[in-house]
Structures are given as structure tokens and as C-alpha cells.
Amino acid sequence: MDLGGTTIVERGLGDDQHPSGYEASLDPWLSSLWRMLNMVKPEFLPNGPDVVIQDTVLIDQPKVRITYHNIANDESHFSSASDLTCLNMQIGSARSMHPGKSSSDRSRPGCFLKMVKNLPLTRSNCGKDVRHFEFEFVSHVLKYETGDVLEVLPGQDSAAVDAFIRRCNLDPDSFITVSLREMDDHNTHDSRIPVKLRTFVEFSMDVASASPRRYLFEVMSFFATAEHERERLKYFASPEGRDDLYQYNQKERRTVLEVLEDFPSVQMPFEWLVQLVPPLKPRAFSISSSQSAHPNQVHLTVNVVSWTTPYKRKKKGLCSSWLAALDPCDGIHVPTWFHKGLLPTPSPSLPLILVGPGTGCAPFRGFIEERALQSRTNSTAPIIFFFGCWNEDGDFLYRDFWLSHSQNKGVLSEAKGGGFYVAFSRDQPQKVYVQHKMREQSQRIWNLLAEGAAVYIAGSSTKMPADVTSAFEEIVSYENEVSAEDAVRWIRALEKCGKFHIEAWS
Image (cartoon, rainbow, N blue to C red; front, side, top):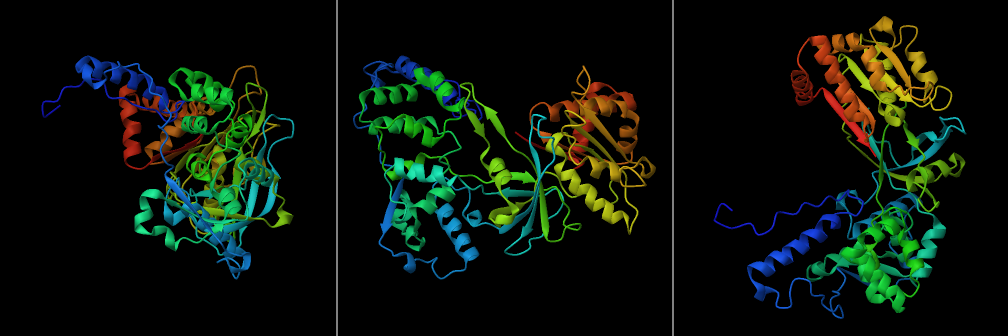
């Protein structure tokens, strides 16, 4: 525009978190683009903007190339390695070759953990299942700090992996390397270590949890031999079929394996499957322990996810349900990575206001363990913690832990300038949330803020962070006797100077 260009159509903005993905905005935008181009210069589109091009030759080659290697099991790179080293190499090789990998340096796990405790934190019939997991380091001990995050690579159900391989007529024992076609000239795949096809699928392709993109249905239509399946797939891939695809695919959380089983005439080359099956992603969890208190361990607080789809199909979260099913006696090696989260480790002299309803309490369990240890040898600043759950008897996570630290001059005790306040949202007719408890302690919150306290908020990313932030703004406005706009600016200034942190997850 600066150089004199004229806008013929508004810039399109796609939201990848829309239920239908970015295509929800792309389809109408493309229609308006063709119409405008047809108006500006009809010779661009001699058959008009709505012509449908026959799709006999419209499919391109897949972006990946698969090379099969004639290797006996005992000749592979993994045959002489120890069990743990072998597993590390297999996971690293499989994930580094996947076209959807996030970064090459994180293909291999940072370390392996083994579960030593799997404890329920909720009553069995309370409507949710939250677990406390304790892990010990197996390979080597890594340093972590409170507020850090642990990423876990979930194990896939063996039966589902085998069913996918059978459905696609693949040989699970063949050795393969995967490379991008555009990189073939650079011989980058020459240095890749061949892995078994089953290993590649198991550690890098999410065949039985994630829903596929619309493009999978488009490509499947080219390989469907049954006419009614081809027509259905083409309809799903069209702008007109987007809403029906949403109902069938995203709303029902259909997996790639389920989609392939619903269209039995489709036989796709493995290259296309590698390109289009969603990559198996690690799941991130806030660490709920202090390494000072547990030198060889790391603890997690995990909500075991399960739900029923609109068509009454039972679904469960891949990673949380896998972890919940692990038996500490089995000694399964869990591949993990440690990294920094959004909650920096606070110094012992920093007063804290913590807000963590539900599993949002996880990082603050580590904070309080750490500060309790520090308080034995040095004076520490006070902590106020606001926790929330449904019922006192059902899902009051770590009840004894919080109460023990809020009594007898513990770090959460009022004797030490702290406090522990719980909102039980469903124990009375009207809902009570953490922000209600915060308003009740308005003056104490303001006094700590005036002393330079930092605010930490963790938990569900739905309405909670915004509601809690609004409660802080109201408290600042009321206690400091300033306008709502000034209170908003005050909280923003707190954020800019690194004293207002939010870590939220969906």
C-alpha cells in the first residue's frame, strides 16, 4: 500500500484454534478472492469464479520419501546397546525423522523416569479423577526448579498401533528411514538411523488419539475405490461439507484409525500417512515438588481426562489415562523432558500471593515445600494461597499438606503473615470461587501487594485467569482508592516488572 498498491480483498486471518481450524476463515476468503479477481480482470478466470476443476491430476506427490532397508534385527544400530540407551536411540531416531517434529535437539528424551507412586487425590464417586504421581530418575538426575514443567511422551495402546499397521497393510518389522523430498539432494537422510516401522509409528504418529486435519479427507478421496466413500470424502473436504466434517471429526474426536476404519476401500501409501497423521506430541505438566525436598524425585498432579462425545462414545485423554494405568511395580521407563515454565522460582524474601484452583495448585505445592525448607534456616517472606475445588469431601487436593503448613507457624500460617483460604464451589446453593475468597481478604492482599508481593496464578485457561485478574484489579481500586482504569494500569505495571505471572492450560 505504501508503494501505491490497491487492496482488492481484506487480509484473511485464520484461527488455528477454531473448531474447524484455519479453513473456517480460508474457505469464505478464497471465495471472495476469486470473485474480486474475476471482477478486476475476467480473463484471469475465463470460466468464472465458481468453476469446479476436475480433480483427476490435482494430487501432488507426498512431501516425504520412505526408504526401506534390508537389515536383520541383529545387524541394527540398536542390537548392541543397553535397554535404556536403545530405547533412547529408537525414540530419538523415530521422532527426528517425522516431518512434523518441533525441533531436532528435542527428539531424544532428556531423561527417563520410573513411577514409584500412583495415588488418587479425589474420592472415587466425586465426578473427577485427579492423581498424585511420584517418579524417580532412572538414567541420570537432572536439576529442576520449582515452577518448571515436565513434558511426558505418552505411550500409545499397543493394540491400536497394531490395528493401524494391519489396516494400512504395513510390515511392522521392516526397517525404514523417512526424509523430506525437498532435502533429498542434500543427502541428509544418509546419516539417519533406520528404525522398525512399528517403532516409528509408536513413537512419532498419533494414530489413536488426535483428530486429523481436513486435508487427510481430501487425500483419502483420491485413494478410495468405492464410489460412495470417494463422494463422501470429497464432500467432507469441500467448503460445503465443513460443518458436517466438524460434527463427524472434531466434535466426536475421531482418530485417524477410526477414520480409516470408516472408509475401508481407502488404501493410502505410507508416505501420505506419515505426512498427514498428526505427530505424537509430549504433554506438559507443572511439576508439583521441590527438588530440595525430594532430591531424586519429581512429582506431578494430573487430572485424568475422560468425556462422552455427542454420540455417546467414551473418550479419554491419551497421556493422563496412560499414566493413571501405570503400575509402579512394572518399572516402565517414561520418556521426559524438563523445561522452564511461565512461573519463575521466587526468592525466599519475596512475599507471594498464590491462586491455584483445582490442579492449578500443582506448582504451588513445590513452592511451599521449598519455602518450608528455607524457613528452617532463614527468615522467609509470607505466602497467601487461595485454593478452590468442588467439594470439601470430594476433591480437596492435598488437604493435609496445606493444613499442616497453615498451622503451628508453618509458611502458610497467619502467625507468619500468611494465609490459606479455600473456596468450595458446590458445597452450598450459590457458587463460591477463589475470587470470592480473595475479595473477603481484600485488605490482606493489598497490604502484601504494597510490600512488593508477587502474584502467581495457575489453573484452567477458561474463565479463571481473567476472573482472578479482574478481582485483583477491583481490590487495587477499592483499597488504593483509585479508578478502575488506574487499577488496570497498576496490575499491568506489576506484570511488566515481573511480579504478575499466569500459567494456564486447557
